Length: 356
Image 1: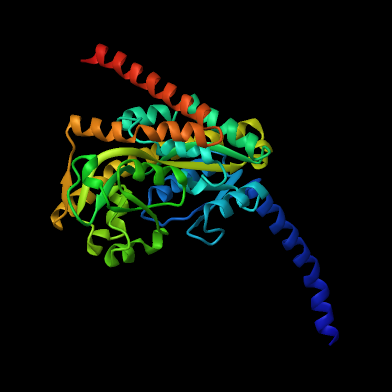
Image 2: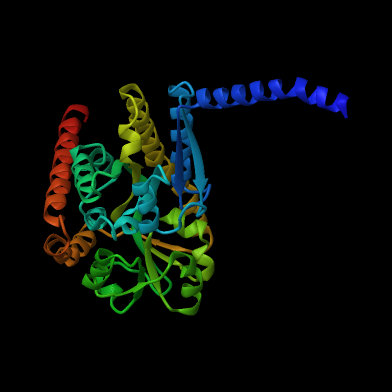
């Protein structure tokens, strides 16, 4: 017994030293830890962007910032819930679609307004412009300075109309089709403007809904269509109308960002730039094989003519007025977007005049 007490007396000081040393080592390993969540999986562009962000920030900060990735629904599962987590600091970074954030910031639905951005080059220019700063300012004001929009990337390429019934070449071909939408108002207004019937269905239920005929179509990118195996549920017709760029909004707890020294803020900002570039590139590569697999499986791809594309835009035009009149902040953000699009198109035209 005495021998045991003697050994414990010898060991105890070393234990205390090890505990203190271990604490100091862990504290010095990272001054800031960021919890990043994406309600997706490792096949998604969101994951690609998150990995690039983590690697860049941890390396560029020389270990002062660590990033934990929570891919899936461990921390939260729905947009409003996740954004509340960002606001209260239980989540540091969260990526949402426009539909996922519309319940909190309704004006982000501007990204779903159809046929305003012609192609990747225009969209990528717009999403690196003052348009994003305008939306950031609006979101900070509406969240009592709690939620900061860091960047807007891409998640899935471009939205196209797809269905189980027939080829869609012009708006009249959509008459009567039951098209799946999210619960946000704007996508439903668009579907109605084109003569179809909007049917809000949760994403996990969509495969079965195609099989049973609850819905007959959707508005998604080809990588999402193939990753979810929707052709196996009967989705065989895709019209490449490219009506909306699938924006991914990356949010951060503003207090966490503001609490960092300027040099680390720069690292975080540069990290989000690297993330954005990764998400711009990822769907371009993934869509090549996705389209090949869709056609190989018997899928029908249709590319509208310029005249048919103009018909789609004309049919959808009333949605612009609805957005400006019915969405809080709609006019301001609509003007910011259309101004950024005009600037991007002008810049491209100037570049073509020099390069061609």
